[in-house]
Image 1 (cartoon, rainbow, N blue to C red):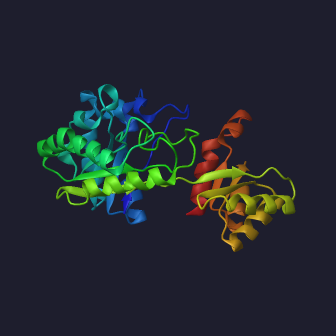
Image 2: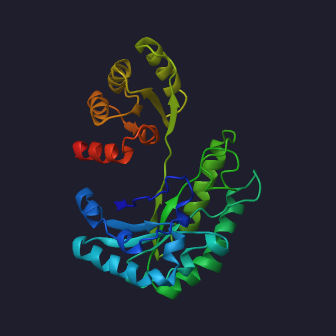
Image 3: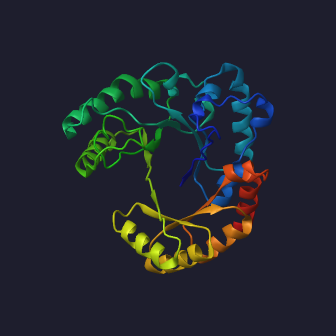
Length: 301
């Protein structure tokens, strides 16, 4: 198991632009998380381009890695962005690969320029990336390559923009299957390729009814659309009753509008799959939303 914590900005800006004013405070490790979760490999960062490629931070990254190794006995990697060029092309410009066990790449390589690729054309595109970019990179550091993020949506243009997880494109399960077939054909027998972490994406669909019967009817209808659907219900007594019933039916739920630790606890006891504290609204009413999250996590442990 590989554990890869994702650090994101509250503004929604891509994590690549995170560059804290107090770097000394920021560079603390989370090795204990990996040990607690039974991870075999721990990823020390993901797509933090502004920090990973900054020579001024090289010593801090190496100190972080050394500290992690004192507390975590598994392998270490970093998840570097793939990028075609410039700022987005992170992985060739990281200086501390020698201190890690795996060369980690978030491998969202573009496989097509249109919506009608074939397995052969995508395989050829992947072979081009391998020969021209990945092989020279691997030979430079002489370490196994691990794709820390790979995935293709079941939509049109999945091959053209594998990194785009929100474009409202039409359903296209064949293109998704072809993308994965091309990927496996390209990488299955490469001796220095250590493997890949495939992402899956749940889809939260929200009920609008206020009563138990109405929410249950909507939830069952939504769940029938696709196995990835997670039904979103409010953190209310009626909502918790719906969660309990849906749990018995094998339907996953996302309990939203959680304003307190007690509400989150009720949702968990009812059988919620996901719980969504309303951090922004809590902050708006002068309550520390992130503290509610921290307290909830502590109780769940």
